[in-house]
Length: 178
Image 1 (cartoon, rainbow, N blue to C red):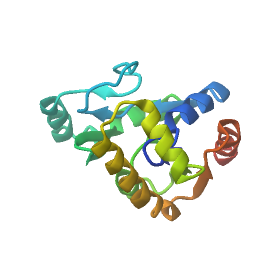
Image 2: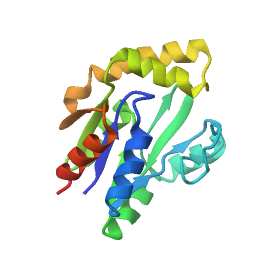
Image 3: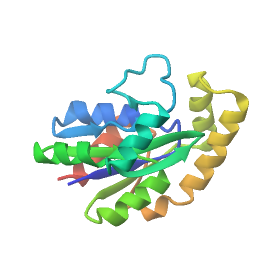
């Protein structure tokens, strides 16, 4: 079983996955590879696998990824081999992935459980993005435009869950993997 979890930047995907992992030890977050720089507090290998572009391209050439995309000017990829290793341990891998990449993986793994996380409102989403204090105004506006486009594709997912209560979201996710 694989779970694909998507949602716009700032919707709370990491918070949800952390709470879900605390509630169910079978849940393992697949650590995405990226060429972007770590944000304050992010740890390599835990939050993302931070690599330079040449390492990323080498892994891509080696078939290490399910999919890869450029998002907000940086490369991101979901590691196929890491996902398979989690499955071999009888755990449930969760791919936290953007919409375009998710659609690619859905074609490769039609058995995946697909979940799109929605914000309570666009105003709340903007407040969360601004609250990070990590992006300039141009990047914030780009993230908000992308959020609109991503949410328009949420109907491609089996489940759409509004993140207005993390505990309620986790309960719904636990029901989905039963």
